[in-house]
Amino acid sequence: MGRREWLLKRNCSLTPRQTVAAWAVLVTLSLAIGLACAWQGAPYVLVFSGLEMTAVTAAFVIYSRHATDCDRLVLEQGRLTVEQVRGGRSRQYLLPVTWLRVTAPTRRRDPIRLVAGEVKVDVGLYLLEGERRALARELRQALAE
Image (cartoon, rainbow, N blue to C red; front, side, top):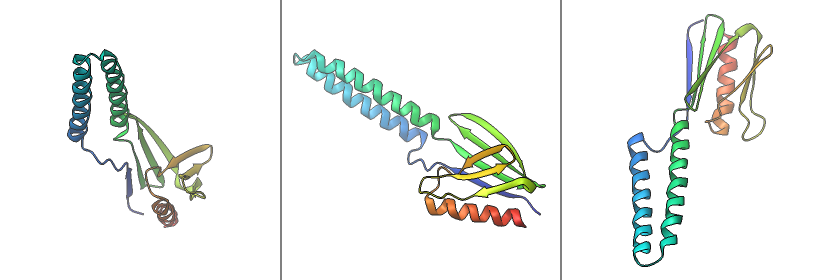
């Protein structure tokens, strides 16, 4: 049996540079409106503009932390290695093929569940429903070889 590998990543529509540019445009526009209103005698608009900029910045930070989340599955030498990256933290699971059971999603948002003894790992959260089912079939087929 040869080496098989699957990389399941988020589909991020913005590059890091585009993310920073979008954030800068939003913050600049909000600050400009707040300053213009404060200059015209409505200082509370600037306060709410500051709250808005804080919320937008928090949202962009959270988005950026999870933009590189992924699942990497490597099947070789009688074991399946699953590496999961979530929010910059990495976890690795070594699952023996002889005990491994692949459970396909039963509902629309269910992940693929890999079970080997007491270890349970959910993968494929970033795939569409049909892609998750296809991956589950492909994993079962690869394990059977």
